[in-house]
Length: 63
Image: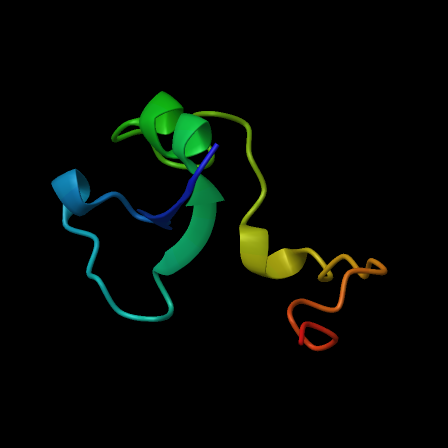
């Protein structure tokens, strides 16, 4: 899967492309939701979730 940005209030419903309305999602979630609102799909706003912490440190140790 590849990452895409998704509008919380869909662009087709007048959602703007500002930081409060755009979040990173996978392509399947972005295309699957279409122009439905989060409530229509029984989804929770992604800003209400705490970020997951893992052991991957990005490219910090890459040399």
